[in-house]
Length: 146
View 1 (tube, helix red, strand yellow):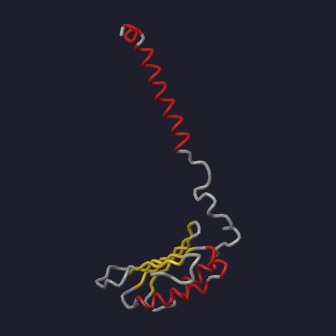
View 2 (cartoon, one colour; view 1 turned 30 degrees about the vertical axis):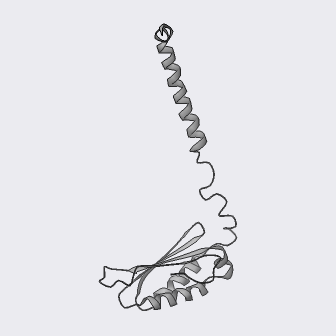
View 3 (cartoon, one colour; view 1 turned 180 degrees about the vertical axis):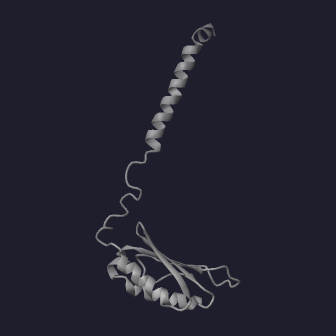
């Protein structure tokens, strides 16, 4: 006990140094952010790009449909997000039909590489409850699942 009282400041210093060293090593080992965010999941993305012309063709197809007010497309990783804003005059069956037609605007290579995600919602607040609906097409499937 006398030995601990005599060297208590040295023991405390070593203990604090040990804690600091442990936190630093733990941070370097477990919280390392090296590398690409998506890892190797994006291999081949440069060979199958989604051009602005494909996005515009899809947007134009939806905007030509009565009841569609606004369309936005966004590519994030290997997913093409298509957000469609509609008014109350369009039905869910019609929007599903047009979404299936939108698949024809994409090449077969693009459909085999990218997932597609459709989000359909009212442009303004509405009393109807038909929307929002979400549809997805996986790169391994041939159709959209709603």
